[in-house]
Picture 1 (cartoon, rainbow, N blue to C red):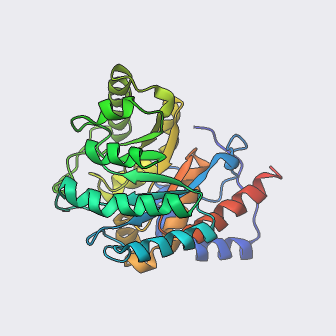
Picture 2 (spheres, rainbow, N blue to C red; picture 1 turned 120 degrees about the horizontal axis):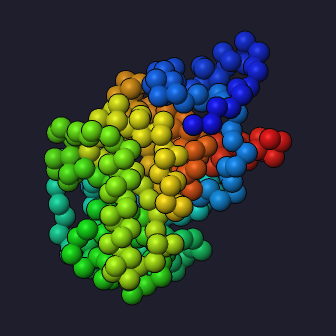
Length: 310
């Protein structure tokens, strides 16, 4: 690991930063040798980082379930995210929170496709579809989806075959178990190596199925079959997932890893979400998946402004 010379800050400046960044989040990261106040490596290309705005059209998502379930409300949220500077809209029609129940293909299609069609007819923005079902992928692609974001990493039947017939990007996420049971007792002997082994296997499966490696994006799956300590180990060692030379997605926004660490409810997790997003970016994340678009875009602009002088 490269050791970088830290900024020399006046005590008052340090006090300001530590008041802004949740102190328990800093302590958790220091246990894994990550210092949020270290100087950012010059190799980070902030111009390539994209902000993905979450748009769940489900009644039971952990953060905004039911809030955008109507077409009108969904489009209004897209309009707001566009004004806030979003790069990609990620539509989800099935909750994948811990303990979530499965949704039928018909129900998921009825939630996702009308909104996708409306967005593509009204806005000039890339749209990702968060799904693990081959038929939902196929219908979404038929209606001009720009990306597929799959928490099951194309392991479900038919998914690889459908996407091999296209050229759109695909995000493969790691999850130990399934949403119904994934948080019951997650266990790893070496979490970084096990996730990278999973990625290697899925990349190989995609290649054998006719999907070029260059189309793939990797997501280690914060909160999907991981304890709070395992999540922060992932964050501390996030750069280890760059070994495949592929783009990375990071999704820590409002998750329980932040809420449990800081003892904050969902509406109080902005500071922790931004801090973890910044740490991911500094370690090579290319896409940041978030609920709070405006604040994340502001943080990214600040990083870019500083990077010009490094």
